[in-house]
Image (cartoon, rainbow, N blue to C red; front, side, top):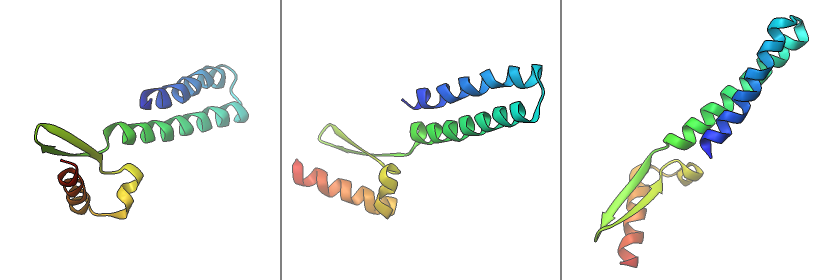
Length: 93
């Protein structure tokens, strides 16, 4: 999903630049710049989503994964989040 989130606006931005270059005007240049800025912002967001840090806890052959930045980790420090994940795994298994 992250790639689609970044690729669609990037394709839209690329399609506005030929018009801005062949018919130079303030309006077409502004339109291309705005489309590029939106594509860049969504690309950075997609990059963050795809590369966010994961916490993994291995117990009895099972791997529990918690995304450290999902829901901004509820405002908790990462060692607290890992301890919470470990307590959850111990109570279930």
